[in-house]
Length: 349
Image 1 (spheres, rainbow, N blue to C red):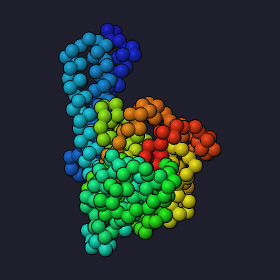
Image 2: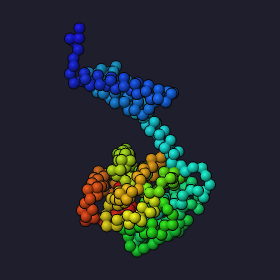
Image 3: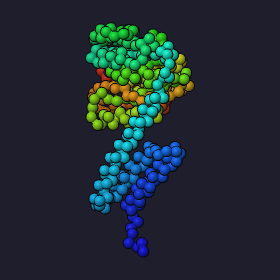
Image 4: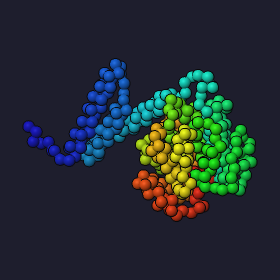
């Protein structure tokens, strides 16, 4: 009766695809039963996408357009459904990161440190985004840490409501430590000088830190320009950052002042990877890791443009791997071109 059926690898692939399509219905049914109402969980979209992909491959092997075309169209719908579901979860998470509706005096005080080394071209955009924050002006300060500047960065900074910390020395981490030493708030927020925050940025950060005494974290990033490869690279960086493998894709990290003092701030001997190192040392000291994904810090891709996307990602990966293995001397002694020390970067990654 079944002698004309084949059971080769392609047949198993097609059967697996159909099994995933059946599984997605079971997943939706179980989720709806649990919620007591019809729901479509993220697993539904992912299982549908995986099933469509397998059946598409099977149909392509058979050369069957009636099967192939619906799967191709379906993959677009399933991928978009998953994207919308993720966006909805981010919005829900963002509500949880907002501080409670209370008096302005109850909001935590923040010190926002912007390390600057010859940033006259883009500093106004960064400081303008901070000036436009939906956060009480009396509850946060902006400290511009001018380190070794020889351009008009000081003049640009003086056009905004900021405090200046200034030194003739320069360095990736020196500028951040310089600003943090003069900070007066219990929460330190380090923002690269080529990074912009949306108006709700500081509120989201304060909401994430609410109720926690010891924490170290960062936020999701987005490029200020670039094509699909750049955007995919940032999405990958955000994905890894959520899992603590890489840090500061958006050029922003934040930490309670007590933890910063305990670990001695940023390690000024490291040429790169300093943000990752600072957060990891904070976690080792007992801080809780926080990753804010309810907004994107828009940051410059100029380092990518200078060294190439693949080259820069590999360099960051090498630094992270060595730091995780305790090989600090190797990272500190790693040769690099001082011209690559981009102003205000502070060792992103």
